Length: 311
Image (cartoon, rainbow, N blue to C red; front, side, top):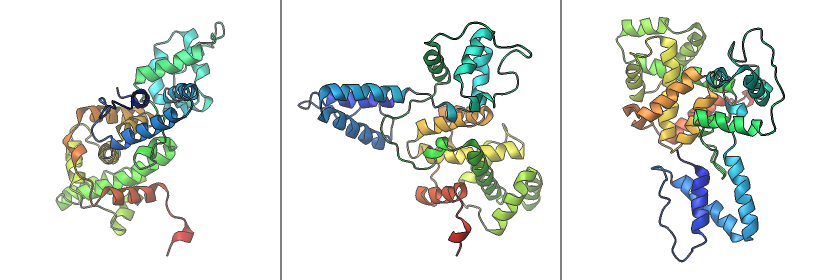
């Protein structure tokens, strides 16, 4: 798995031999020019000062890169990990998990029904070990040790889950309407009736405000998901995720997309991880009319302008 800290370490080590600099980082993913440039800049800054200070800062950055941001991990991803632990180890594990995450664990995931946490207190090394175990078990991507651009959809993983869920409902409904508009009228009407009640108002708004898109991606992914997700609600949300994924892949944001997958309920995030590995054709479909326009539209859904911004 790609490691941004290893990327930084490569250029930091290369800076010690300026007479024979390597041409490229050999393990960079295609299209990762921005990350490579950031790694080079930070490595140059670390190597420009005192050598000992640079090495100490490198160790600090290594620690930061290896962190697991518990607050950005959806509790549903922890259920299997906790289920594999003995009751006493489970109580130690729950002591490590922040209360805000622990309170949202699926029913039964926190232990045997009716059982009380028991056993001696966790040893001092447990917290660090368990955090590393969860990160390794999930394959959670390292955080970059350099400042990352806050461009959508890569920055979504830092948002609160309700914000993301609302955006997916709005964006998925717009994409759903964009797709069914291409179907025969009777079939399209049947799909509109099948929408979950929570999306009826969003569908009306999409039609009245002409928020649909002519991008052929939408009917393509609507059909691509038909077999696995025949129900309208399940398909609608995954259509929204599919669009986020293609925009992120085309901006070399796969690590950020993986972090987003772990921010979401496992039923959605697990599907994202499978599709990122499978590389379906729709991931390569160009974003129309442009990525810049796409980011503006998604940003407006995430952060609607206030009344004072209305004309």
